[in-house]
Image (cartoon, rainbow, N blue to C red):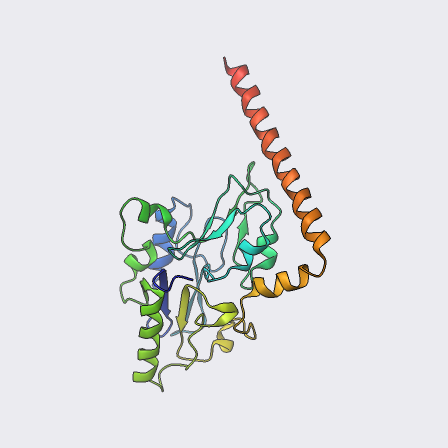
Length: 252
């Protein structure tokens, strides 16, 4: 993966729990609700959990370097971009929700109540960057720079610098540096990550490699399953096109 791709460094030690990141994310995406989200949802791409009076933990898509969600998507609705984010294309999505099962952090959410549901997750403020913005909304809103943006290469270096300068103030682990092959969202913490509920034991190998190693032993599943799912996707979207055409005809 391109080492100069965009990334985030979230320093839990610096976070004051103001929830400005949650509010800014909702505002940037025109989502309803306030800044009280403690769980991810179709209208909350980031959330904040108060673990104690002094420790507050953000939740959001980790934007894996080799994302398992993209590897299991049979129609390429999820793609890791060279710029860093893992992006989602609702037009391609067939609604199989394999990505929700494959994600080791259980990030993707589904619009269960929508008439035309989509998978939802952090898009790294794609629209803001497309319009000339330089920072994600959550980064711009943070008053204490608990979340900073930069290239992954620079942020890994910065994380190591902070740990080296304050070894008693930080847990030595830089979460996301190697987990599941590495992620574009990195965390620093004053306490062991296991105490904060961060998933452990993921190893340093990208998860898609393990997945395809198993699937390669049963190629029929990949071929037949992929063909079947593509057919379902085509039928679903064809029905939507017909419905729209009929509605337009009735409106004339």
